[in-house]
Length: 196
Image (cartoon, rainbow, N blue to C red; front, side, top):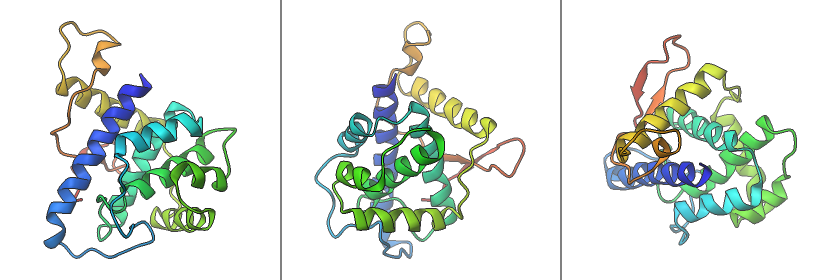
């Protein structure tokens, strides 16, 4: 299941980053500590696979990291996810999710090595990410399940299985759907279009 989830998350993030790259001339965007000088040569898929391989965090961390990225994008509209910042946002969101969710996790220096950045940069990224989230790290069970359900539905839509089973419902294809988020302040968790 994890490889399928990682593939799907990477395709979602790729689509959002490419869309924001194209639209960058139409919106005011500020440069932050998350922006690289150039686009990383490693693909988002390979980067997520690397994080999964070496971070040893629980599978739920990747869902929670996705929730954090969604929250960050909502709270920081002038910092949309693009190809210059997606990798740093990913390593930071997974690290913060692991620290918040898992009983055992690696330190910032280890995540910095996994992410290909310095420990000092990792520390700055974590701090900026936490402030960007307003330190809102708690993910309620309802929110977690809403994001899981949303991802499962999107995965099934992308490649409808010949017979729907638990395993085949997680098959993945390329993503063409809009990136959606959930407004956690509303009890119904109604979908809202994410403006990234």
